[in-house]
Image 1 (cartoon, rainbow, N blue to C red):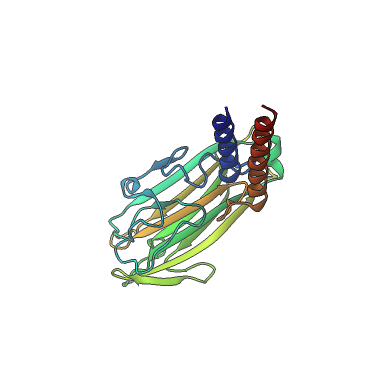
Image 2 (image 1 turned 45 degrees about the vertical axis):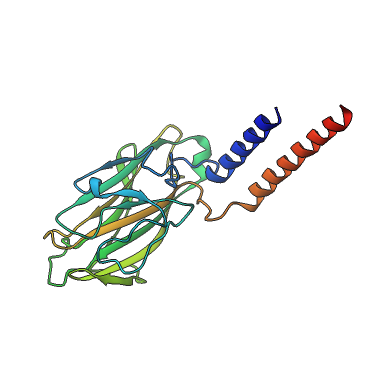
Length: 240
């Protein structure tokens, strides 16, 4: 009986730490170690995977990129080029609780800037699109040529410099109604000439940013529960 209670408490504690309230999207931190809950499509889907800190670096990448939260994150594509494009998406239904929430997407883009001149729009690029009931109502894009927002780091050379940047995309849900569907899509593209690659890294997608370390309050609750369980067990032994 004691073992069953301890196991149940540990499972409850684990859920508290890994599934923040009102997370909205399934497996938003990719902590299942795979794409459970997500739809992945495009010619670069086979190049994509859920990675951990021990995953090997991409060709041309000189600095490692670890998960932004927890133990896993999604990596879309590599830096090899060849006209690949990959989209990762998920659709959820809005509840009354979600209306006061904010959607968070922790993103990173590793994009190779072509060493020769490419027309505008043919650069490797990454984008996020938010849809309400199938209609786009918000979007974000970054490309290797314009390096939107600054702060891009040089992560190596692969027939052009590979530039890397991370950001936290946020989107308020107050414009939605109960029962509306929200779709988040994240797409990365190689360059339009096929010779320069683009990769994206995604983590912590949902209405509660996933902590990189266990939440102190959740730890305290878990510890208190274990302490109480031990006390109850000792009391039973004394009264036996």
